[in-house]
Length: 312
Image 1 (spheres, rainbow, N blue to C red):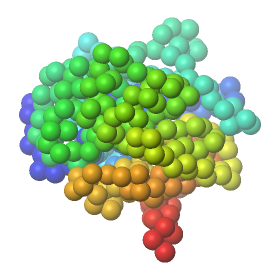
Image 2: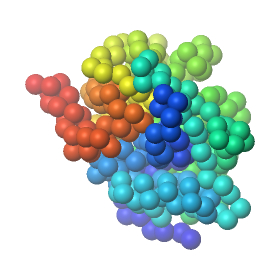
Image 3: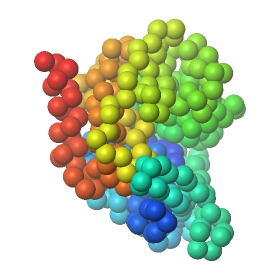
Image 4: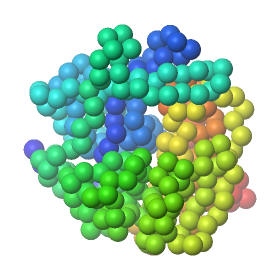
């Protein structure tokens, strides 16, 4: 089914899963997760017009993920479900003493593989034509042929493309770079070859370095942004997603999409806001703990205070 959209802030696709969280060895919670899921749900709670473009199974897990998106305020018309598909799950083992976590794709109760993430296919992408033409931002953290075609449609319509790869898919990566406005990635994980490719593209880069902060780069020019100290660290999962939330929210808040070509300076306030949100989020378990425990208005207040401090 093709829906008509007049205007959207963000259409996003990619890694959206159920996070099954174990804290210090014990089951703690289940919630919507994955970078795409975290970023889109957080922006929806910040009153942005968000439409996830994802594919889920016609199962209880899929219903649970949809309910969380609905509570966040997302537009669900581009969420597709299939009877022959199981919705994806990831286990997170959290050590709250050290503030460290690791992820697993194996169920610790049954020792069997969890269902894996599946990208959208051409049918789902075709249903989003109106949304892709109407959105200000297109977000993707995974690549496939269908995702690349959706990215092309949004880019051609004038959307800002925010690309957050967790690995390099050689078949599609360079084409995605041609359309990306902002590429955010871990330099340590993806390596110097990716640094070189991004530096020789027209995209702005946000290269993260964990506890050492990050840098914003454009070509050979870069600005270092030290990490914001966290008052308390229970869980660092979702910290990178909160940086993306801060950047996208601030660009939307400042109406800089898509009126002009972005420069490094256009990202500084959003990065600082996102780093502040990430540091505060570390005090809670779960990738969106600050939204769950303190509420969206509190999170929005943090973002706006950073913006006000920069202005003053």
